[in-house]
Image: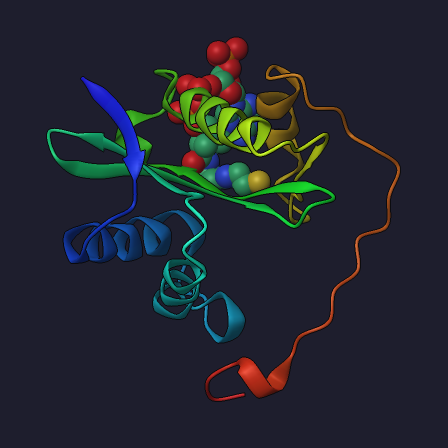
Length: 145
Ligand SMILES: CC(C)(COP(=O)(O)OP(=O)(O)OC[C@H]1O[C@@H](n2cnc3c(N)ncnc32)[C@H](O)[C@@H]1OP(=O)(O)O)[C@@H](O)C(=O)NCCC(=O)NCCS
């Protein structure tokens, strides 16, 4: 039985770090798992969700809402538990939370090379949009940068 809950403790922290390392790889800099978790917890916005099975974290998603757009990040399910609706449930859970906050549109980004995952999001009502995504790192806030 899988349930979705708010991220809330150090056990979740250890298990999320392990999951993200397995699913996304050993990223550093602004994508370092520990830094990302600490900053999201500090934001205390109620948008850090974990999928739990027998008390263990098997999936995550982060959401964000800035008053204009909602965003989804870090949608991940442990390889052993894929194709059972966990990823869809995580996205639906985050979408419902964003909807309750008044969000009118939810965006997400897919990194180059992972385009096939668009099919997963399209099944949930998302559409690929003609946009050029840009970003700028803020070195002053990135440990070790
Ligand atoms: C994408 C992901 C979260 C889906 O989790 P999940 O629990 O397997 O999702 P669900 O069981 O709810 O849905 C599975 C459906 O999505 C489709 N899907 C999932 N990943 C896919 C991919 N990379 N390419 C194409 N289709 C994909 C499956 O084929 C399945 O479709 P079906 O029901 O028609 O067979 C999971 O595959 C994952 O963690 N992937 C690696 C991380 C990642 O790419 N995250 C997205 C970052 S933008």
